[in-house]
Image 1 (cartoon, rainbow, N blue to C red):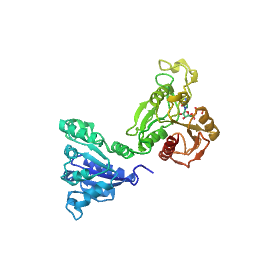
Image 2: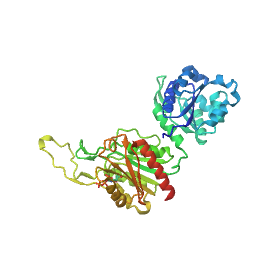
Image 3: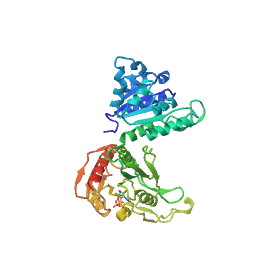
Image 4: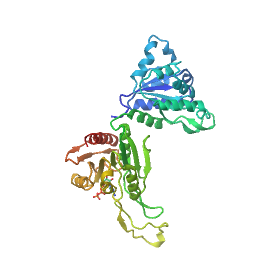
Length: 403
Ligand code: CTP
């Protein structure tokens, strides 16, 4: 189940040209399973109509006309109280100022004042307005009150000027909303390190020895840990994936770099989830120049690459409280996973059979069996890597509670 499902999001749209992008955001949230109530400020109505939002959310979009309707005296309270999150996007300098100062002169600002849920603000304003000391002061006041911010970005404005004030793009804003919804979850206050992707061991300046890992399972795990409110470091080998909003990304190309990054990031943390496919072997010598065909077929001698989990197992008191490994196997799945569980001193290992087309490297689904240090085993059905990540993070939360 996605973090958005059944979540009640109150989307306050104010008068910026970026208001049209809020329709895309409302659509994406609705598709993800959220119940989206939209309120438009009078200025927002000049750019987009309530009908635009009603058409994508399937729910009534509110305007100041509703302020003076039959249920006017309770509308703002009802909207503000039933929401899990109030998202002001795009939020103008004017609405930002009203929120900071407690001014309530339209349905958006009245609702913001009445709301008891967390608030996320995505500012959008022209060059100079965001940097203005008045706006900066308002941002500071709101931040101090625990209001979350998404952006603004730097870039080209509708006015043609370039600077800071651009509305963050909806896919990224979705990540910020996810982050705000996750606060206070089961992993709140917990530091989690997740590794992802397949390492690359250089042969020469252009060639590498690598593996078929896509990084999807590791990235999904980082997202699931963030959804649960955790503080996440994502030690990532090269992939084409976009990291989840809120994760601290630490790039690591080789097994050696991954070892160093994991040791630096995981000292004293609550958990390490080692989903990366780390090279076991690497070229003993790296050629300084590109190997040329005219020099004949090279003989590439391999040597052992460092084993990250073995190094972590030897950390003693600095070892993360919980360490979870993965076993990618093409035969004798559970026997091999059991050996790795013990030899790498893990609390849990997720074993998956990479010989199946619907599981393992590159696929969007996985069929995982979880093996625990206390001997328990749990077979999960075929599921999306996102769902598998959610289950693993839930089990991690239990392990953290009980260890
Ligand atoms: N791993 C690691 N460092 C390595 C290789 C693997 O930390 N150099 C971790 C992986 O991230 C994974 C676990 O060890 O969590 C098991 O990885 P896997 O490749 O399945 O096993 P190997 O240790 O390589 O053992 P084998 O060669 O027997 O498959």
